Image 1 (cartoon, rainbow, N blue to C red):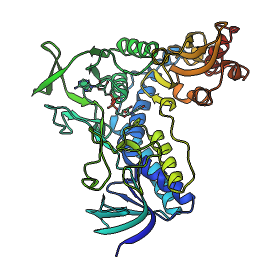
Image 2: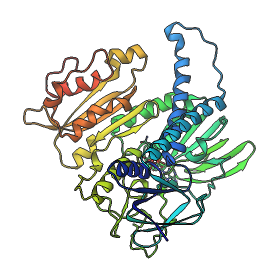
Image 3: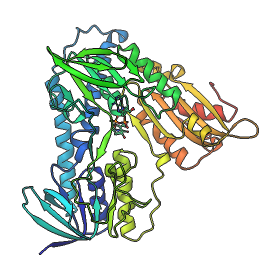
Image 4: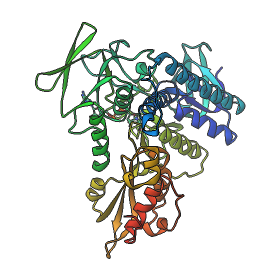
Amino acid sequence: MADRHDLVIIGGGPGGYAAALYAAAAGLDVAMVESRQVGGTCLHRGCIPAKALLETATVRRTLASAADFGFTVEEPTLDFGVSQDRSTGVIDKLHKGLSGLLGSRKVRIVAGTGVLAGPGKVAVSGGDDGDVELEGDAVILAAGSVPRTIPGFDVDGSLVLTSDEITRGKDLPASAVVIGGGAIGCEFASALADLGVEVTILEALPKILPGLDADVAKIVERSFKKRGITIHTGVQVTGHTPGGAGTTVEFGDGQSVEVEKVVVSVGRRPLSDSLGLDGSGVELDERGFVKVDERCRTTLDGVWAVGDVIPTAQLAHVAFAEAIVAVRDLLGEDPLPVEYTKVPWCIYCHPEVAFAGLSEDAAKEAGYDVVTVKHRFGGNGRALIIGEAEGLVKIIAEKQEDGTGGRILGVHMVGPWVTEQLGQGYLAVNWEATVDDVAQYLQPHPSLSENFGEAVMTLTGRGLHG
Ligand code: NAI
């Protein structure tokens, strides 16, 4: 006999647990199948440990600038194990909190691997709960993703690593090659370089962080180079030859670099192959992502899919939003779909990057007549006080007849704590606010967010400092 629930979810990462919490809050009886630990990649192997590592790098940079504030400090040494234990402590606390929350909402967690065993049916096996059959009026697939690998680079966890392994490491190498200069590659490259690792990035495309506004990407690249990171773009990695204390990575036109570790960060692939979807009626696209409509409905009635297993931005907060859309849809509440072109993006490398909406190039390609402004943190009091004046805020707005800015199309930031400053820009873009709407609001002084306010005012044609 199968156990019946209103909703059965496969996968307990941000997509799955958000769906469980939201559905339970709406009064549904929910079961969630998880083969490892609730929290998923984000909590255990991704966002949280990666940002903890980046924070260790921030402390190192702060110590390095202590002399500017008049402190005499000895050359700091790092016990990386202590730093990693701290990270584990943060993860454990969040894991406990999440488990408690799910428990208090009476979400049943079933340990094991779940497969779709027919419409509304999920079979679970291989976990502490043994073989379990679940039936749900609705099923949500939220199995997530795993790091992609490349031929010739077998991930062994000691020489060749992905984000899964590097966030668990207990010591740092002297040197590393990072293959792939996307969000993950740049976050690890930044942290490792600040912690004294000699880092080389190998990126296949003509620039690192493809997809960023060009002015923002340029500032990150300049900072990386200044901090000793070697960047090779437009190169193919051809293989590697282990030897000595590490390996020699071959790339481009006969070039090579000798390193202790290789970090592969070339994207993530959906974990759809273990969901038993063959012949189920749930279709996959050519890259293995589960096909969905704008309400996250799959091609099989009664089955939704959210998070990294569908072909949308692989971000935890996007998974949260999709989970809510799916649950509201199955409740018959007619939810608004996620507007994928306007979701917030935050990359936590140094300097940080945060943006929402169109880049200048994308806005022009979309046919908008635009006006843009760039305000640098170099003129911002708070940025100078904290000693982090590198970076800018760039705003892209529709151009009005008099040349001033109209609707705000994109807000792009690079610099100190911009991941915490994007909120206003995100709201402006998604509210389809105009420059005049936003310019009348005050920014506290002195604050980093004044840079956003100043940039908006400048677009009205009457800036104070720009
Ligand atoms: P990505 O797709 O963002 O970047 C991968 C990069 O590797 C691309 O620039 C690509 O051109 C390059 N590449 C692919 N194959 C290559 C090869 N053989 N040789 C050299 N370069 C190659 O993927 P990434 O960074 O692994 O991240 C995975 C997903 O997770 C992305 O969707 C990313 O946005 C998301 N994510 C976002 C974060 C954030 O916003 N803070 C943090 C972590 C992940």
